[in-house]
Amino acid sequence: MPRRYSLISIAAAEGAGLLVLARDGDRARLGPRSLGPASRLVVDHAPCPVLLVWTEPAPGIATIPPPRPHPPHRRQGAALASPAARPFDMGRGPSPGWVLIAPGGSASDQDLAAWIQQALAFATTLPAK
Image (cartoon, rainbow, N blue to C red; front, side):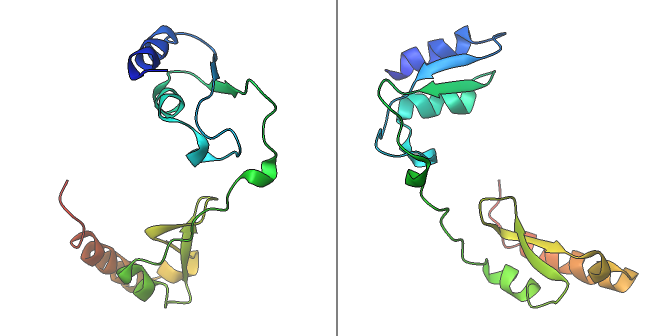
């Protein structure tokens, strides 16, 4: 499906409850990298849920590759040295540069101030947007 038709599909789905789309891309496996450019564009920008369908039997769930491990960010490693800290994970592996602090890790104003200082120091290393 050319990009033009993908954009037309997205526009036509405005107000729809569901968009059903025959998928393109790697038909031998499942997973986020198995979509072709047209399906990816529609899935990422559709104004409603998208149901991807195969024209042949779908591959098994075992074909989904495991998430790639993210090495800790250079400053994240220092924060993780604290027993109150752990990597922040939303289900697909740790998010680089993110740290989750246990409630006891910021119990005092001094603890909280130290974490804020560390976060500000990290933020200054990021590129400008």
